[in-house]
Length: 254
Image 1 (tube, rainbow, N blue to C red):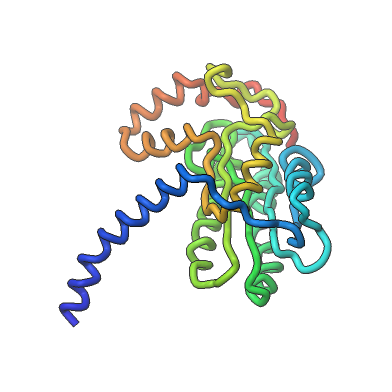
Image 2 (spheres, one colour):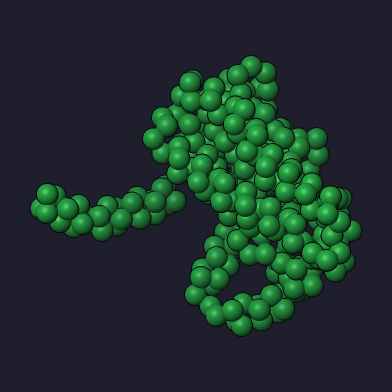
């Protein structure tokens, strides 16, 4: 038994190196995109913004929206853009119900059939604010952080479920009605994403079976900095970038 444990302990770092190298090679080499023709897609919040563009992107690739749902896209979300003390209690509950709990109910509704078919994909349109919160959107940031934890747990839970996978997309500020009026200090350096770009990259992530997607790629730097810098330095970054006051001019759709 001791030799078995010792062997597993020695093999583990080798496996880690192999997986890192494999991931690096996959980034450099052109990947084969999964065929989506014949897949049935359900998109929540598909009437406008990113949701509407997602519907178009999936349709371009031959997906339908009729029959057993094999791709569920949890996209619906709301934001109220107020501080905790200025937020209405009902508005706080609404954001948690739609942005977080809604994913529990839709996933519970469609995942069993996906597991039966051994064919399915759960997609979550999240936000980089799940990893780096800002003032003035406490309801949204909290709900997205909860949503991220939900998807992270779900993704790990599906490792032993053949044919069923999950993708979490964490985009930067996107130019939709939802965050209209939001302003950062250097808009030319950090321009808002186009909803059609987020939609296209999301569908490609599904085709590549990519578990997590940060948009743009520079958001990886933010995650790394948050892991290594002291709190005081992070606060200065928020002030310098303008994210500390970006919601002061918020006029978005609640």
